[in-house]
Length: 221
Image (cartoon, rainbow, N blue to C red; front, side, top):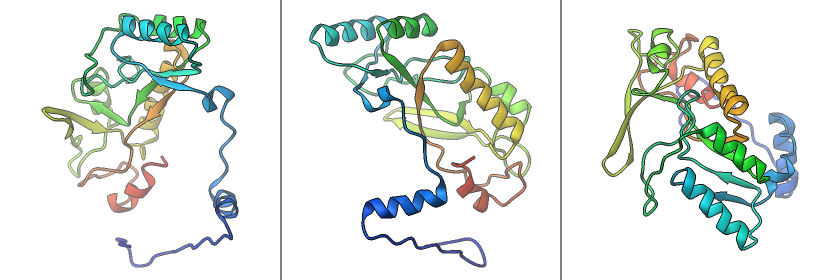
């Protein structure tokens, strides 16, 4: 265990079995509410564009495969920042989604919930990046410049992006508004929350605390 501090507060939780241990842990951390019924059902990953998603879902229904939710990670909703827009999983080629909200409504009409993809990054070429940078919503260095990092997502696929500074309440509210748009206007029922493990090296969080400390709070924020 390595800690960048003068002291370490160490908590050991004991239990006779996993059930008792989990009960004691959640007494301290808080207990999550029961997930909705469909959350415990059958989820299917469907990608490749609107027509392929609908065709594949129809085929599954025709074979009486029970489907409670579909995860369409490549369904990009630029206004909210939802979606994974890089073709990395072959052999399914990327497809076109002309109207995200319309597609979600069609799937809801079939009784299927729809999940998207979400991360705490704003891509340098994405809608909203300039606004977030100008307002100080992105994790910056000691000189106040947004930290732009290249993420290697697949062989030959490197994306420049900046992390949102959740130590800044205004930045957190901006991110929350984008998520709310995806849920309310586009109609997503949820998302895979990817990344968010911590701050980049050299960060100077708006909250003022050293990045080494803010690093561990970042996922919670």
